[in-house]
Amino acid sequence: MADVVLEVQDVILNPEIELKRILDSLNEKQKEALLALLISILKEEKNG
Amino acid sequence: MAKFSHDNVLDAGLKVISGDSITNDTTNNRDLCVCSSQPTTRTEAVTTYCLAKTTLTKSTDFTIADNTSSPYGRKVTTASKSSVSVTASGTANYIAICDGTNLLVVTTCTSQALTSGNTVTIPAFSIIIGDPT
Image (tube, rainbow over all chains, first blue to last red; front, side, top):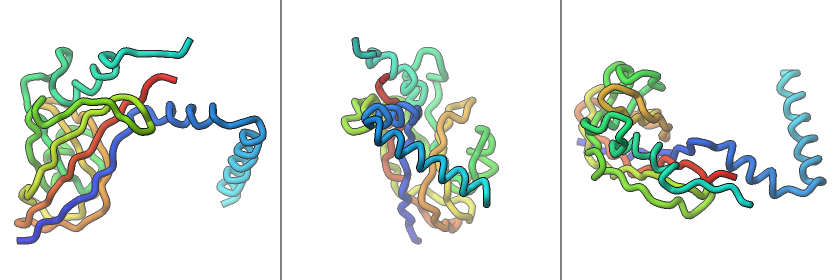
């Protein structure tokens, strides 16, 4: 009889807090670069 | 002044999961279910999509403590459950915790095929609530 060992991911109930912590740690230039990257990704997704 | 919440505030949510809360189902142990599809109700977790199911004894199979790495906060960690009988064949994708009435938490696991009659081991995992920022 085989036993399968699963790998289970932890649950973070409020991940936006961690995201805010990361954003707060960025300087203005890093924030601008991140914004440009997000806009670029969203445009790519929109264009399929 | 930095934002702050007492551990008891965060622990109140975690105790709903562990069965220690006075505002929730404290009479029943928890069902730990391995599911093939994402359950959205208790019935789906314990019956419809259930491949294997075991019991997490309320309070004693849960440990509440600080989460000492990012995201800092509080966490409840489940006990590992070894050699749980597989009752239906399928691919394990989700792990759910239910009380006697509600589906409480769903998480994901690496996709693995399970065969009825074999066994599965579900390692410990944590549910984390981060400190306020």
